[in-house]
Image (tube, rainbow, N blue to C red; front, side):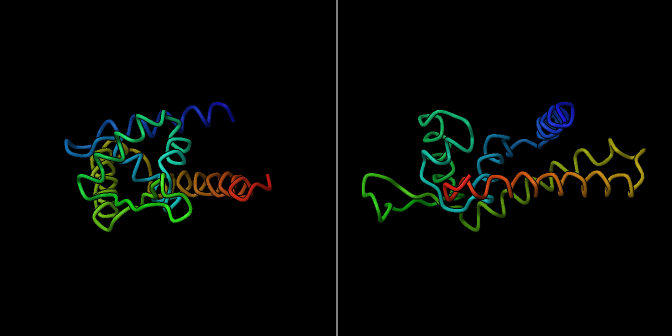
Length: 142
């Protein structure tokens, strides 16, 4: 399992290195977090991204300036803000992912389509198991 975790992390990082200019990994990762979790406070985003709150604030501010995220005052705490991905953010994320996929596809020409499908299916199942294990944490029931 350690090798799988390590290889998955390395694959994602290396694949992101093939992103064309204009698709920084930091932005794609941040937007992916909002895609997975929906509306978040800055502190919640920082926890998901495993970064400091100042780093989260800088990233979020940039993505708001670009129109990929939007913010509003948290109705439960006027000192906090809630951040959500915009339609432009979703389009940017999906376009960025496609650009990365198109960049690396030729590197896997030796693999059969069925091999790639099995790898993808296996990772999907593992992601589902991890997501299910984290779901109770969101409600404090873990």
